Length: 393
Image 1 (tube, rainbow, N blue to C red):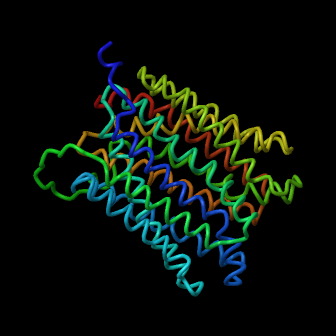
Image 2: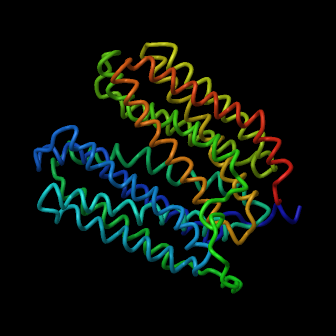
């Protein structure tokens, strides 16, 4: 009874939750309008737009393993505020970029503080949660970026449609990211124990103990990389759905939010393995629906089902990574999770694009489902039992 009464929504947790919401809100506010902005302002081609906007993904992926090491080795609030400050400052660079080349530089550089901020912010959130409610708190923490990702593009498109003013959206992103920086500035964190400097090794950057889950996560995010990249053009070219991508991602976000709300309760009860199992099986059904049935109801229905599944799976996997790591490697555990997700996403974009170009959308979506099925199989056949033997708490 005493453990259950520990306060989940303490002052520090609310602040770091809000900061994460503002991080993703400011980022997603501009994302849907950048292609239009580059086309209208700089006359960029579609291929060039894709190249320019994908730059941040590479730098985010490169910085995350080092981010985990920095978060574990240096004062966490220092790393957190430094990454948020750089994230805030680089927003100012977008409206000031007078050429496509400068814009590409700013966009690429922006990925580094974004990648580091996501690692440091989530690690601090874990630190300030009571241990008895940590798994539940991780589930609710994910709601901050799910809600931001759901509403920010809708708000951006509405404002632009009403005003046609890019500068207003740039100013909004700067203000919101600055507010997120202030939220983290007001955090009051307990000083961590001073540790002796540890010898550099691969395990300081990647949590090697979690290798079965790394493989599984890469396969699971591969599927998301395929569908997120080609859902819009597929809907338009094959199903005649124009302007329906916003609804697709809205339904996906609703599924994520609902499953995180319900899943957080079972995570509090310690049902980590059950949450991961249910989430993956539900997602597998969603990806199968999208690949097998070619109609509007399957298109939108699959979005909601995949959201439900991923909303159960992701916080459970994050808890698993943390439970395989000692407390001194929480940052490394978080960075390993995100690096695994980013790697799978990148492979999904690249391999999915190759399959679409040579064999078509349907073959790419079946490859998406097969990749997901491999990730599920790795989990049930090996990783699940491995976790039960190797978990530290």
